[in-house]
Image (tube, rainbow, N blue to C red; front, side, top):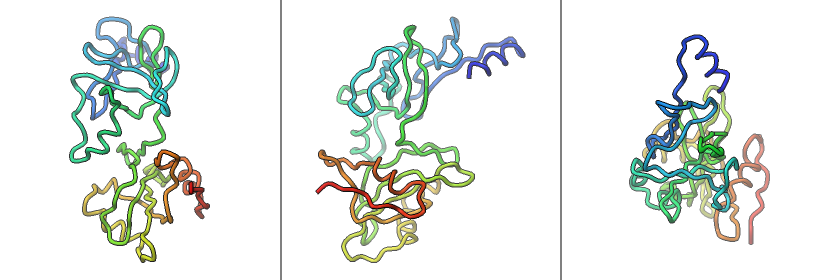
Length: 229
């Protein structure tokens, strides 16, 4: 925050060097070591790294000072998620830019501002997790599940799984958790598992996560979710 930068400068005589990075990309941007360090920004992309801002829904490239999803391409970028080829493909544009899930803008001087994060990110106990696309649970009597965020005490957010049962199958919340516990780290395990007859999808077959959030989050009793015929 600019006020924090100013206070530290007054107390120590040093200007904070703020940077922005993530596990998949290493360092994305940095304020200059020698040059103007702009409070409230995370600086400029290093040589060889390309950064752009795009519309989260359409992928349309945005102009200076327009807020959208930050995308990165460059040598430090990872090759993909281990043993998750479909998820890797979803996170990359056809021209090899990686979609970061961070919302930001680039000002007229080229400095990058982080303004928030996309809704498809869960922060639980200090860990950042992506809400998953529907996939097979690998559990008997369950065809697929989708992860959302639910608000819980202490951790701020936790993982909620919306599971689709197979017809006339008897499957409990504890059974789902026990099944996925064999393959997931503890901080990724769902704090709650709710069941739905089907996941709402749009005309292109993609799950409409906004409808699931409206129906299941912050409500004691899930409401009906509209689905396409």
